[in-house]
Image 1 (cartoon, rainbow, N blue to C red):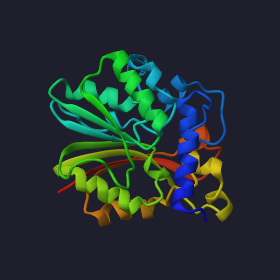
Image 2 (tube, one colour):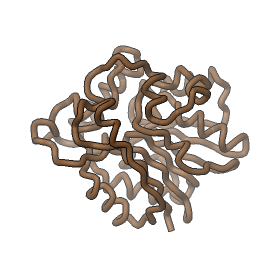
Image 3 (cartoon, helix red, strand yellow):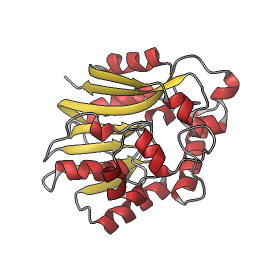
Image 4 (tube, rainbow, N blue to C red):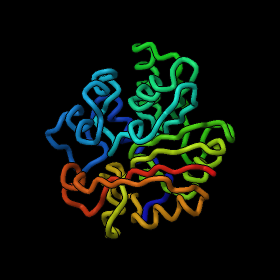
Length: 250
C-alpha cells in the first residue's frame, strides 16, 4: 500500500498537469471524448453556471455542491480542493458582497490559476489559500458552509479530514459534499494504481465506511442522494457511485 506522502505527490503532480493544461484527465478512468462542458452538465451544472466562469471549469468533479443546499447572502463559505475556482465563483455570487468564499487547495498551480481567474472575472469576495484538508489553514468555528466536489476521496486520512471540517464550521454550520464512494472493495493492485488514485477511485472508501466516519465525527446527516450512472459515464463500469451528502454540525 502506498504511503500518504506518496499518494499526495501523485495527486499533486496530476492536478498540477491539469492546471497547466498538459492533461485533461482528472476524476474518471482514462480520457474520454467528452468536453469539460459536457462533463459539467452531466454532473449537475447548468449552462449558465458553466458559461459564467468557463476558464475555471476543468471538467473535474462528480456533482454540484453549490446546488445541493441553500447558500445565503453574507455567509462565509469554504471550498475544499478548490481547483481553478469554479465552485468558489458560483458560491461567491450567492454570498454577495457581504459574504466571503475561501478556496483551499494543495496544488500550487491550481491556486495560481484560481487567483488569475478571480482577477479576470473581478471576484473580490473570494480568497485562495494553499493547504491540505487534513490540516486546514482556517480558524476554529469560522465557517458557515463547507463545500467540496470529488476531493475527500483523494485525501489519505478521511477521519482527519472530517474532523477538520467539523473544527472550522460554526455551530449549526453545514457541509455539502459530492464524493466518490465504492460499492465493492478494490483489489490491492487497483488501490495502488496511480491513475486510479489520481482519478478519484484508488483512495475511495466503501460507502458505509465513509458515512460512518461522518457520523462518528459528530455530524447530523441531513440528506443523501446518489448518482450510480456516473460509473458508466466516467469510470468504465467500476462499482462505485457519486454520493451527495448534506450534514450539519450540531
